[in-house]
Length: 151
Image 1 (cartoon, one colour):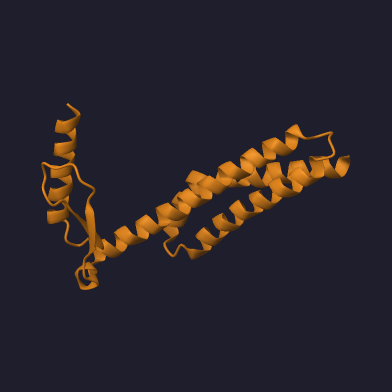
Image 2 (cartoon, rainbow, N blue to C red; image 1 turned 180 degrees about the horizontal axis):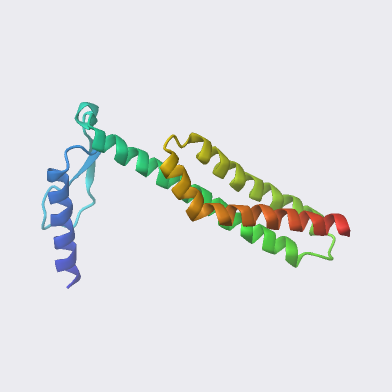
């Protein structure tokens, strides 16, 4: 069963490589029936000079940056939780500083992404989907700092 799935997957990958010449790089499967690691080879950049390729590349780059922000957001939330767990201990101040630094990095990545977006529709869509959680992160970071200064 697994062999059949693997063969269909290899056949699909080979077909996609043949039918998508506008990709920056393509995957070549030497023989469809053999389980082998795909060989990657560069496709000349002149093939990529169409609008669809540029929009796809921009979307891919945007998605990478969103993923990076989401990873940093999760890391910041974890650090905020760790800091709250240390409240009342000698480690609290150090944990608060670390949590605030990571949260500031996430917010900085967010702000930089919004600045770099040229398309207003794309920016508004992104703000609607992620803006509230970034504001929440800012608020939680400030709340944690306020707890530190109250002690």
